[in-house]
Amino acid sequence: QVQLVESGGGLVQPGGSLRLSCAASGNIFRIYTMGWYRQAPGSQRELVATITTGDTTNYADSVNGRFTISRDNAKNMMYLQMNSLKPEDTAVYYCNAHIASMGRLPGYYWGQGTQVTVSS
Image (tube, rainbow, N blue to C red):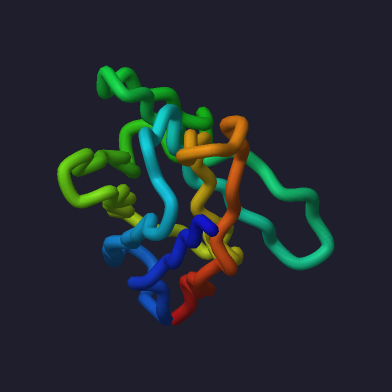
C-alpha cells in the first residue's frame, strides 16, 4: 500500500503565504514525477505544478512566479510554497505522485487533499 498525506492548508489573508507538504509512505521503491493539483467548488481539478526526479518543474500560468514546488527524495516529501496568495487560489489542494512499488506495476496515487482558503 502507498499513502500520500497532505498538510499545511488553512485560512490566510490575501497577499499571505502558506507552505503545503506531502508525505509519501508505504511500499515505495521509487517515486517519479510528483505534482500538486487543486479543485475549487464547482470547478474541475486542475494542475498547479509538477516536479520530476531531476527537479525539472512546471507551473500553471496562474501560479507561475508566486508558487514554488520542491521535493526531498531522501524523505519522500514534496512541498508547495505559496506566496502572494489571492482569493482565487482558494481550493482543495491534492498531492499526486507516480510511484513504483515492489511487486506491483507503477501507478499514480492521490492524497486526501488539504483545504486552502484565501480571504480577508
